[in-house]
Length: 254
Image (cartoon, rainbow, N blue to C red; front, side, top):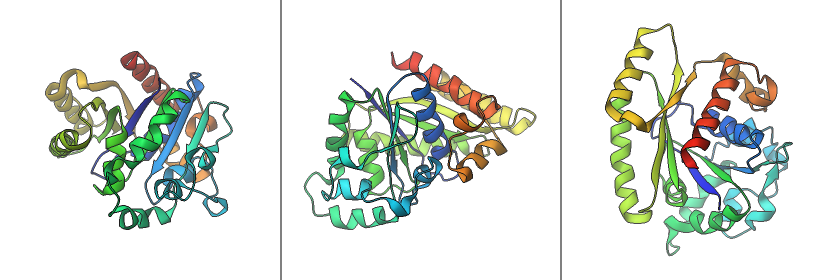
């Protein structure tokens, strides 16, 4: 049975989409059948996978609002073991359309639960907004992976988010766990990155992944080119970091 991992944070610019795209690719390269689910109306993960949003017939919006079947909305990404359930700007309309639906927070849970028989890992990318779509993503997840940028007030931001998760957990998903906190945009030569990293590890102990994701221009550029860095330059430090993260995640979840 597959696992659903939601990559979430209420802070923007911490590397959620970069992590969703490259981690799902790394898992696919480890011969794990993977599905990337884009739950951000901006559709950055969809674009980063090289999918032309203008040519899409169905997206996650159509699936969540009952206008399309999930199986027919999934797009292949060139790797046999990697698929994407894409998103586009119309996802912003979903919240208003779903507001009157019963169990509206559990729609994604019901849609993805059947896919756990097909995929080893389902990775969900989310927006930084705590809206109905993000609540659906957290409610559907077996675990949460929380990217944490190495900057001032990072610890405070994560603590606040974890308090929010506890509330959602009690209401919608009692079984959800924390897969781990992931230090991102890490500058090995900067004292601030080392200090924040040490502070987070001292506070959260084993919850923090050993793997850290460096600040990398190659990671930023790969999204522009519409290709995960692992498929563009596997020898780069950014790509190698996500391969290491995938290996660590596999050891934690098996």
